[in-house]
Image 1 (cartoon, rainbow, N blue to C red):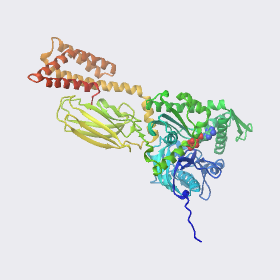
Image 2: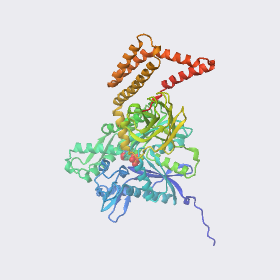
Image 3: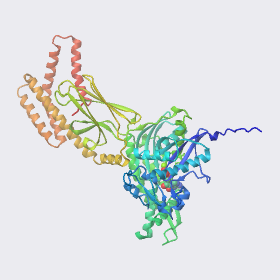
Image 4: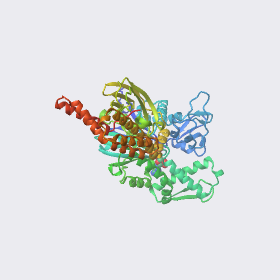
Length: 639
Ligand code: ADP
Ligand code: MG
């Protein structure tokens, strides 16, 4: 009898999408063109991101591990994502739970190490155990697993992304790409609905909050801005409820053992979940003292979580501002993350944006579904040009101008690839070189930003101050590589450098830089005005002196004294600390020299036109105007 090999289409390796969450992880794939989340044998689609290490060195992942947490808190690792790519001494890890941490050995990298039964486990290894469990789940369903797309919070920095990739590799996955979670969610929505418009993705998970403003045009997504808080989520609601339970029970701190804390947190989460469906919730008390049953009303719960919602609001407003939008300009708000099931969250989001949020795709699963779609596309199983994902600059890029001030050429959250140009001029006569200093950051002064590169454009022929025209071009390619070109346009001299903007800043550093800029906004602006005023004053004094020396014969009687007095007043103001005073003296000097400047201009034109044809005269006039125009358009002096 002949044996026939039956071709099982399921056996061909299938690309998968993984949402590696702080609280829950999911794996999905594309089945008949639609993303589908893979459930385990209990029809459970969420794999809790919890790993229990047993005494034989085995790892148990998911609900079974969760069940061991209360009795073996030190051997059961939860929320490991919070310490991916973090230093061993990072305070964030201390918030995680009652773990023992091992210090790095001599010569070892300074990463978090859990001390579990004498094993020293890094977050990468713990995450790899979660990914292995997901891979197994996918293999059970699909037989053979192909390349994977794994999602990460938008705020993840280089180290955190690298750690996630390492975990994937350690789990035996072929990691095609990492994808930002909010973008994955939007992908799931965009491909399902093919809608145009501007959307805001509000992702409140267990441990992270991400907000993203996206522009959707003919099925193409553009990230307009991103923001969030990498330490904010449904876990914080559980903590708020747990604190309330301890407060009401008046449990002395010495009785708050790790096991009790863990049990109270579990009870808090159960109460929270009940309140999503009901007005009041109850659960058996794990305290061992007081009433046998704990109850919580939804109204009290809403009060407890109000500060958490306010924090998400701050991040949303900032992201909207960065995208240059007001609430009304949004076509929709997409809810992502299990915590957005809470009715108070939906009500808050609705009030914040003034419209009903979209929630027709399961907020727990939408990220994994988007990741599956992306994996499907990247593996060449869809139409490649169906979706084009763009990225944004995390921090503004600019150059140093006179007075140590930053001139921002590309503002933060600009979509990449991108380019921009700015024109500058010289401050001093006969300046033969430009120092170009490229900086990154939100603050107004160079000293408060990060220096990325310095280079010099040399060999400019001696010219009068303000005559040289320096054109600076910034180009950022799709990989985030910045190239800077500086060109002196009257001579054609050009210089080019490539800079890699630092994405190695961790999210706290970026956050700190942003907060710093907000805190110092007013103060910075005043400093900036002062510095700019001083530069402008210096330029005007030099130009006036030069004019007086060159065309003394054009002065009217008494005019020289008047101008000299205005110059002296301006110099005095420039030595002071008031930007307003400098501006007012600048306009005084401008006023005092206006008639004289007009006479000089006329004389120059007359001299140039002596014996010339009319079209040449027009050119000369145009040239004189051109300089003025360039100045009005913001030609600035480079120090
Ligand atoms: P992450 O992306 O951080 O892994 P998820 O998106 O899975 O997180 O969200 C997990 C959070 O959602 C947890 O805090 C969980 O308690 C909460 N959550 C899940 N279901 C509900 C529900 N029905 N009501 C309220 N909160 C829920
Ligand atoms: Mg999530």
